Length: 205
Image (cartoon, rainbow, N blue to C red; front, side, top):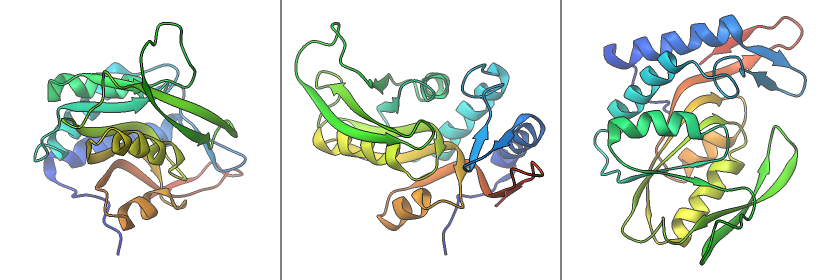
């Protein structure tokens, strides 16, 4: 049986707040796509982000996290808010080579579920190393391609994956299940069981 984290009095309020916001403002589109850009990944609701940041800190309080890793661009907002509570730096994997990124890099390939394309993703070796205990944070988990790419970068650096925090997991897709079966700790604030593009219905786990 897959465990989706512990529903506690402290954390339940944040999950309920997020689920209500998804129900209110989320738009189900063709191809199993959930559009939440009015509050999560284009326009960002900072009060909601603040609560989610505190919740990730509570959930992973038992892990020796000294760095948070995400991927540009949608994961950066929640990673930065959460990092204030962990009091650690954020590193974000870049999807394109930059003239400002000097020195050696770790590199991997990631296929985007939403954009249907493959990205070369890189992190400078200056900001990820064997001494790091890393928490991965991202806005969505569907097939798990982005998270698996970030895991690849972390393991290439000889660092430790301490956990994976996700704002919205599409539980009807295999990404979360496969990551948990590999032994990674995946904690999602909202897990969607099914969506209906015709009626707009969103059902949570």
